[in-house]
Image (cartoon, rainbow, N blue to C red; front, side, top):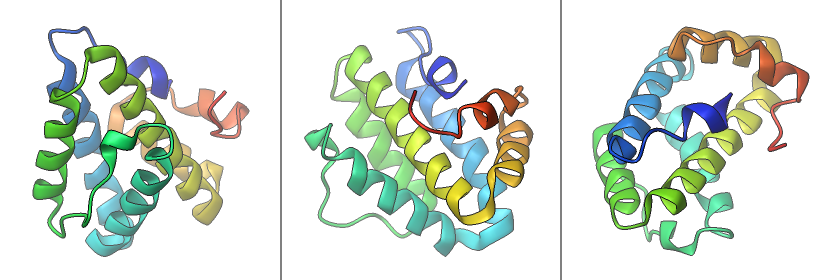
Length: 130
């Protein structure tokens, strides 16, 4: 599900990716706060940098809007294929971490609520990048 959502048509690219992140962050922040979301995002970004070094940053912005502006800039500087792959990895990594902390059922509920999708597909895969 995440891969299909994170692979928008090329003309929508970074904007579509930011819409996914904004919707997801709103739901997560409502539960664990902005600091909790920032921590999840920073860890996901750190892990994704191994595969996508262009995501490297000295400091993750403290404000969510600045964080997404930075992420959008990263995506816009890459080909649509690279940006989409990085976005998928970031989202999968973040949801894997979240599921390990709060459980798959609650994570699935958050994803379903954020993206109005059948997030239950992820539960069967253990949220792993499969």
